[in-house]
Amino acid sequence: MNAPLRRVGVVVMILFGLLFANLNWIQAYKADEYRNSDYNGRVQVAEYERKRGNIEVGGTAYALSKETGGKLKFQRSYPGGEMYAHVLGYKPVNNADIGIEQVENDFLAGTSDQLIGDRVKDMFTGNKTGGGNVLLTLSKRAQETAYKQLQDNQVGATRGAAIAIDPRTGAVQALVSMPSFDPNPLVSHDTAAASKAFNKLEQDPERPLANRALSETLPPGSTFKIVVAAAALENGVSKETRIPAGSSWTPPTSGQPIRNAAASICPESQVTLMDAVTESCNTGFAQLGVRLGADKLKEKARQFGFEQDDLTVGQLNEGGLPVAASRTGEMTAPGGSTDPAALAQSSIGQRDVRMTPLQGALIAASVANGGSQMRPYLVKQLLAPDRTTSYYTAKPRELRRPVSGEVASDLQDMMESVVKNGTGRKAAISGYTVGGKTGTAQSGPDTPDHGWFIGYVMDKNGTPISAVCVELERAGSGGSAEAARIAGRIMAAVIADSGGR
Image (cartoon, rainbow, N blue to C red; front, side):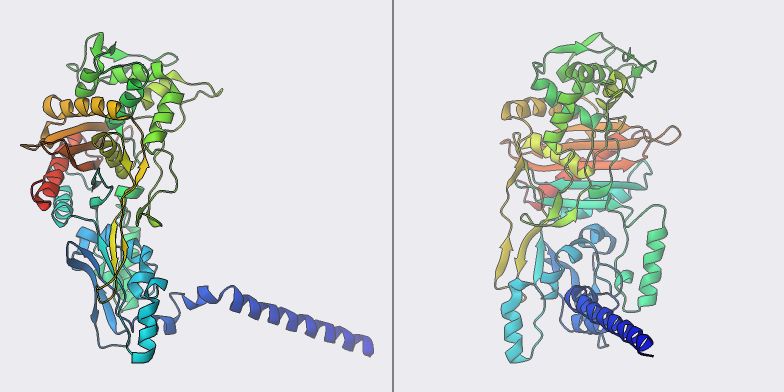
């Protein structure tokens, strides 16, 4: 009789022990998760009692909260709709938030430690002071131009991206991804309707929720030749050095010849590096890359920012929107040695080379800024709810220095020749110096090519104003020229928004 009772007692004690452990686990380790869960109704009601701060561009609020009179007192609204969606993101009732709404959530919601003074004041007044305000670096005119020009592109592309940054500071001037989406239905207080709208977007094969400017990595085609040219300039080649070219060249170990886009492009046996960039000579750069070697090519790409896994775009001193790493890929044969054929293809931005539009803009910005690459950022300032106190003001800082001033100057001469005499003519802006590089990249055996353009604009004094990358996915023939045209329009919009500097 005693033995069974003892066994029952032991079991009961174990169960109580497990219950006690579970309660401690919930209170000590899971409390924050449950407190902040999207399904915690009490938290939702409390969160919507305080007016969320604005996200502003150029003095206009493109994310703001309005009173509803309902159980959830404030409704988030996005007057810019699709135009700003991939930057602002959205703050839904049940689903996860994204964009600046997510990375600056605490400040916008008023729960940040920086705003503790306002919350202490609320304890005495009984008020619910609103959240803080986030001011972005974007140019309204440039953002609008980038959005409209991508939507109305002349080659019928349905997917792409455009990004512009200030080469001197790293401030993002425009950031657009195509296709876009309207965030307003996603923040409806009718959670069933909001979920339905989200599911429709998530299941769309065009992936409108994807921020292609920061997260899409595609073969960059001939825009990558600027990286190869930089490596060459640092290894005994000048812009007037003649390099092997020709209408066709077959790499060692490969039976597949590399050809130029047209028979008229560098058919000579040798061309200068300047002409090779201007004409976008595939045979010249394929041979140049093999001559330089995989290690030098990969190292120069890394110095420009390839392979960086932790870059974000938000504030300068902490997190932000995540950026996918650009990659040069493998250039080796099965045994581990360098494969000349793979290296040759990589040298013209094909094979396994992958680049984000942001990385393309950073390459152009580094060249324009004399070799100094500034850290990109979106958040210009954080203002108190009453706008009297600034809790953060961006102070630009250098991210890296991929090339010397001398090499940057030579690259400028070559990129400016592309716009004056080569494939980038459509990016030209009267009265300003524009440099750039087009790129056409194969997307697959039976699909149209991607079109790229990276470039920059300077004033008559040589001061850089903007650096841009435009990518049109599967744009086909004329895609790179159209990307150059759009880039020119975006850069002109930045000029106009800054008073014609």
